[in-house]
Length: 618
Image 1 (cartoon, rainbow, N blue to C red):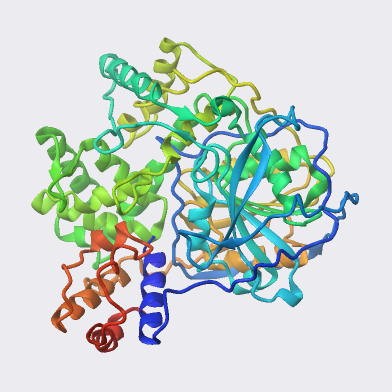
Image 2 (image 1 turned 60 degrees about the horizontal axis):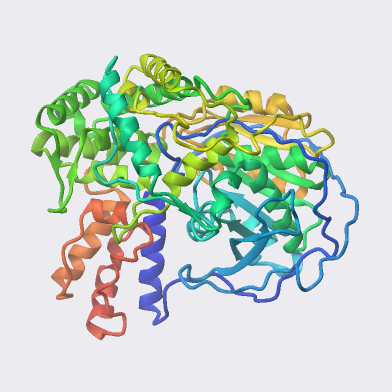
């Protein structure tokens, strides 16, 4: 999150100083690609694994780290797919500039609502791409899924174009899409109470849980979908079939794909449904390959417990961590939690909003997804402890819930529920659901009250196409990346995912944080060689993050603080702006709201930027 803010702010400033517009990706309206995409018929059984979010949905964050050790890759494997019919003009995608995603090209793909009725009603899938930077040496398209379930691939791609290594973006069109049920595709929409609506349930408090269930059922009654049958058709099996339609429409005979977190479920399911159409699949931060989703919250709770203690230990050991002056980190956080529980809420820098106890805990969880967010978690705790200010915690929780700078929310929370429940064949009764939530919570040292506030799939219709497991027999080698300190998808799940796939190859990353590609440097060359040259790392391959990386930099020297200083400088130079805070920068990683009042055509503004830009972390 921090790294993306920095990249975009710096790019916007550079564009302003050169007299140009905001940064944009290279544009190419012609759809290039392979001549012979395979058809869309295949034997079908699906593979899946559990949702990768402990409460509502997973937010993929980006970290900046340094790495030290890597293994050497040794094997090159190439597979071919049986030739299929050449896609005609009616099935190819019609690309044009995106209305809201500057620099990207957008299109819409029509797919069957029910793939069992291929000639029946269709729904629209929103797609975006950045064309390959080196079209003469283009391999094809590389499709991404950011996770969730419920994460918008198009919103992900807006930021990913800044972080994908250049050797990969040169050879592939970078493509992503909003899966069915999500975002700009045919979506499930609900009127959910997200602001101040994150609940905690204390140990053995069945009454509070029953009240939470009643509120959830009422909110689910507001859900709508167009067409009406969509809500039961949003499962991963159908998303994988949509993905194969997308592959064909892109002109690719085989699929090259990177899936993060829940995206590993989607990728593994695709491989089971269409094994001969796999060119290269990267499954990063794998979810557990099982159809028995009960008890998975307990494993995630343990993962977040361990990550929280790693954060606390790192803070306690670093003189630059703000919390050192207050006492041991775990004790300070415990005191903050006790205080907000006693008074009910903390104020924020938005007079119309307060931070609730549930949002505070969700803010902690959100920051634990990325080691890069640990300094902001420390600042959030410091402000909450010293002046009862919940502003930074509010931003961290908002990031998790998909709140946009304008105050609206994406539909990722409801999409997460409906997709997860479409995959899950189990529908335990109310008592069993409570007992499972209570048992999951009892296993967590720090986040039991969050885990206990789960009502499962109560109130959601029975699935019509639940997941089944399969080894993806005959698929090309599939690269599974597991991070030892991953809080949301424990490393053991990646081991199990690789073992469950006939051609699965595990690559281990000794690092903290959720997923590794684009955030842990040593992974980039491994993934690049696999995607570009189909070079597969050997069994037991691994690399490590640099343990000497300075996570907590001195006060005033972090990249986000330097951006704040840049805006303070503009104000000092006479530019009429409201002061910008760290929370403002973190809440607006695109810079959309930060720059809304700047007139880049005003000579005074341009001169002020030229004077102040040296403050930016270039």
